[in-house]
Length: 167
Image 1 (cartoon, helix red, strand yellow):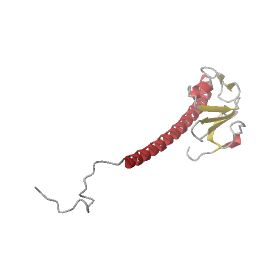
Image 2 (cartoon, helix red, strand yellow):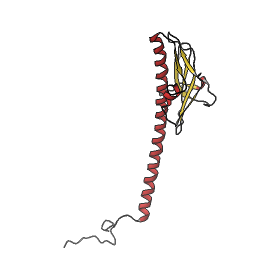
Image 3 (spheres, one colour):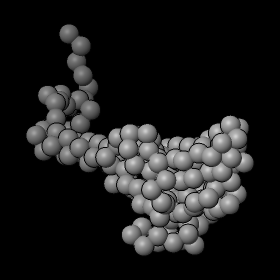
Image 4 (tube, one colour):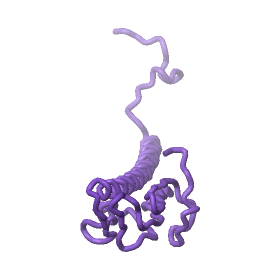
């Protein structure tokens, strides 16, 4: 039999441990729960911001494609705002967390040579993030300016759509 030269009473290395105490286990579980909550919350905010970015890109692409389609076909084009094929439905894609505020008419009109007859400001936001993307379409050229909205979305103003260095 091999004898240990350390006495269990005086040496913590030689003590045999049967596991964690209840207090230690509760502290560890509490810390793990807090860390998981932080990760989940951060993930939700990032997902909401990605949804806003994606909707803004869809809107910009849709406006540019409509303008180019009118020019290519050499025919005027009306892009409805509401309905299944409307601008809102195509940008939001049924995502109820996204919010769209705009000053657009019920139809955006493009001439046969691709000029925009109508324009306006659109602000896209989502629950769970402070990010609000804005797009301002200016007639007659139909130039779309994209930025970050720094104003009240209820009172839309194109001058509150400021350039964003992250774009």
